[in-house]
Length: 456
Image (cartoon, rainbow, N blue to C red; front, side, top):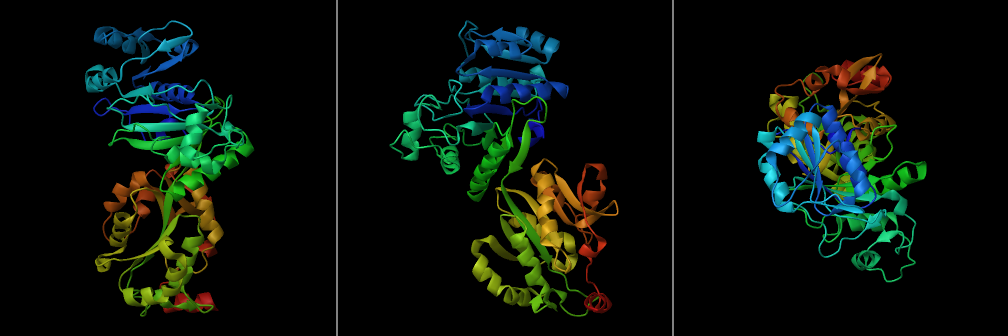
């Protein structure tokens, strides 16, 4: 997965993203790799630092420009015309190159349209090449124009003592975590706490800026597992994150994305062809809606959301036991517009999703053969960067179950009628990641004959 996609960036001179990288364990590598992606897409980017960077890193940019009290706009435009990428510095003398004042980054953002500048990338603090740090009082130096703060953490810090030479500013780090003994080893739980601490990973974030931790150096199986654990801890606290290896040029920089997710059970229909509420049909003593919601809770999603309608009272009664045991992980939403078709239930779901929900899995209540293993397998392509994931039978993409990344939430809200989300899967079908399954796994129940045939 490219950084541009994983960071949810839309490089555009009209509204250029201003991305500040803070923390430790790969800030410069992430910044310059992202710059390379933007240039490769035919767009222009400026990189800079508001602190200092190693002099040898200047060579990572095709051109650099020294800035005094103000930016030479003509010289910058010439550099961008020639190379598409220019690094702005105050000085370039070894051993450390000095960065520019943050107000100059703000000025640059205001002039982006004139320069046809699609993005501005800023290294906002230093870490003395350590994999983890806590910011000093004066750090990080984040421009007001920042739209995204990326907090970088090196996974090679996990298991090491909270002391030099493993940690930059170890006293501050131990203070943030409430740990006295420098021999204490850094754990995944500590990493999650550091990233979420207001004086840690998110320190200095402008109010309107997004925040996204980047768990870097996931370049061994052990580090990848540790990174997944940290991502899981962050997701449980409503924080998305990225698992990355930005320094490994042989493969895509972002391995996986994580965050809060929702499994949506669509159970609002009147079941007119069945002639009775199929949501409440029982299989092995369990109502179909109960079975579907149980699968949603076991699917690997952070929560389950049930959309009821025609038989809202009966559905609520059937789910009483599950709601008591699942607690906040299970929510029941009534769709008052259920008669207008399935799209209204999708609307009700999207409008109810938590603000931090990164993707939603949709499936109907009437697929009694649906295996939980299939639902679980759908999440992996999404984690690896696919924005639409669906099942496929004999090479044909099916409509449900299917996952949609939050990029598609506006399009889900634009659906109308009783066709559900299938049009979004049919459009540009080559861009849909699929998981193969048997036709029998997706049997749905619409009529009494369907039900009798299924039971026989």
